[in-house]
Length: 96
Length: 486
Image (cartoon, helix red, strand yellow):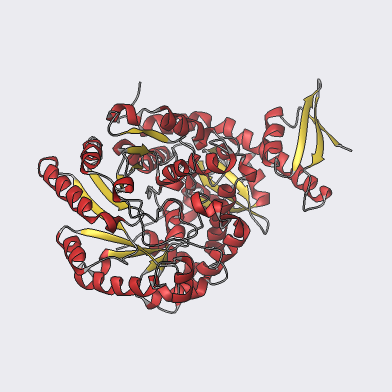
């Protein structure tokens, strides 16, 4: 029996949910679908899971928050990251 | 009146700051580790992470100045921060433009040992079948000297390379002749058990500044168990060879590598004690490679990553104890990671390079002229998988070899900044791609990182090093000395 997790898509981006599910690929099988304002996860434990499903699910929920935070940091720092890389190689003669 | 303003004069009054690129991972005990764009790290209590990202961390916070110093946030007007980040980025990547440094010559597959975990050696009297010829060596040297790298290292491997010592002499002298005009920084290394090292051979090594990289698996019983040979005297021959090599070639001209066999896993202190007793200044606590006979004989499955990590941690704790007691001794795997964590230098270790070190950092010329992207690649070929064969020195040009599909695909597909999970991982700046391992184990260049033994091992060691540095200032100072040797 799969566990359903319904997430508000104004809080959790699809990308964050996908990344969290990938990090748990060794413990959980997660099917992701989307409705107009929800991201829905259909979750099953991978056979042979050593921890209890509740523990892993709690950890998964924390991971969702982390992934959302990572997206926020990445979005805010994209310009400066590109600037630093461009500056780093500005005199190397390697640019197109 | 003081000539200097107080600290509060430098605290931002607006509280406005900009985030710089950083990644984070949760640690045990309610903390997170943050790594900036060049792999410098900072610890932060979990609750402050959200405040930091929400721009709510006040300038008066006890961690604020540290985050600014570590290039994780910057205030308006902090122009030097970007310049420093750019400089450090360039320094970390500078080795890439130099291209291949390490050139491995497999001069013979024949060996006097029959180690269970060995990937490639042959018990054969047939010299013609498994020895490199002069023609193959000449063609290989043509390719070596096409490398743009000013530093060229030629490492002779086997089997037991000393079984084809005349070819080693041939290659050394040919390379030296070429180098009169080339003026490269040329180095030679022989990887040998020392069991066949005569005084004449060692004298030649001294005269041509050849370094010896040997093998020691631990105390006599363990070493002989791991490394069987006729007469069961591998250890005695090693010690005899070591003493003579130190006398003739030079004390520091001989190093040793150990392999962690299933029999080693419970004996890390014995192994380290043996290294100290024999006068070595460090040890590389290596795991077994999942190739060749190691897989065939199930040696590889005999211990898992968790058991290896336990072995490693116990060993590192013991080494720190020894250092605190006044015995200087390094653990080399930690040192590679620590160099990435604490400096802007990339140590150029093939397994922990991104882009992958295969072909870029090292290239292998096999006894039969076949060229492989790394030592592991030729071991994979010995198991019947030619995915990382780049060509043959008798058939292919330098251009064809280094633009071989096998190499370019591996480099592109495994690039960690585009790999699921790696791209967001705080440990990515310290880690590597290793497409050969993942291909060998999981059938694709990436593997699923949550299931990857490579990922578990590297993150396991990195987390342990962070834990030590967090709780033990004396150990952190020791690590700083390891990565900044005089």
